[in-house]
Image (cartoon, rainbow, N blue to C red):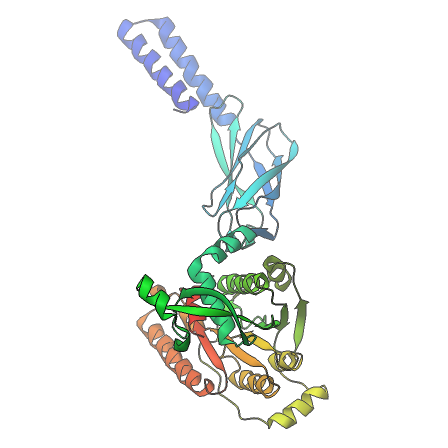
Length: 427
């Protein structure tokens, strides 16, 4: 029970006692209590300004420091308590006694509990010296924070047997390194495996298909070509960009673990914006790319495939410095005979992606396109019937586009419910 309620209850009890006993002294005590409460209530006019400054980026389940500024703009002294109200972060509660006109600076520890772009909200409560009255005030300041997956969560994901096997399938699907005759391990058969490598003795003993895995000759470099253009990152609801961050981090962690060099080329519509060679860890790639969602309506209807000029003419123009899309300029920077994973929206510029794929394959590289379909990232529960029809038509058009492009480049279409093992199994 609050102290104010205790005072009111006591005044009511005293007044009742005075009435029953006919005691003037008890009546005076009751009146004094009510007068004290009324005067204290009239004098309680707090005005407090609380500002919190959060870092723009953080790491999942790792503490960050926030700076809190408390200023008492009223004539009432009291205790200010600051607490976090968002379920996506844990924050140590703060309290400070502030006198009229006083200003205090405090430091708060915040631990994000979720990955992606999260919104943090805090509330400040001012309480008078006697603890009779309270007033709530909003905490001013930017509450949005980009939270990246921690190294621990990436390592834990990599420990899952199915995940590691699926990533190994990605490596084999790209044809990274030729197999040697040196035996490496036995493992369970997965879709897409060569049936000639089935170990029938182990299969008979374990009552499930087992294959022999052999070591590979080389640990080749993997090139990640990633579109960071605002049009690609545009979304109505958080999800697509957060998904891409996790996929990029997991791919980098896996290939580094098995000795492959990682080279990242980030591009937009006009050219290459960042090149990262041999990052020390997955988080360094994520931090350097700084992928953030752009609010707005994504391009759901796909663009048409333009025929354009011949490949030879295109290469000549690129070498001469002519204007071209960033994916083409990034493809030209990839050495011959490389292994390339392109992360891009096929519907934005299918012609340029096809040309880049032809250019890479002509130079002996192997290419896979990781294609986040924006249709899958739209919240369908809030759409009207007409909007659902528009979404369905866009989905059909994108499916037709995929059929045309699949002859030029291997496309892996993904959505928010696709985990990395599912993505890689499609290779």
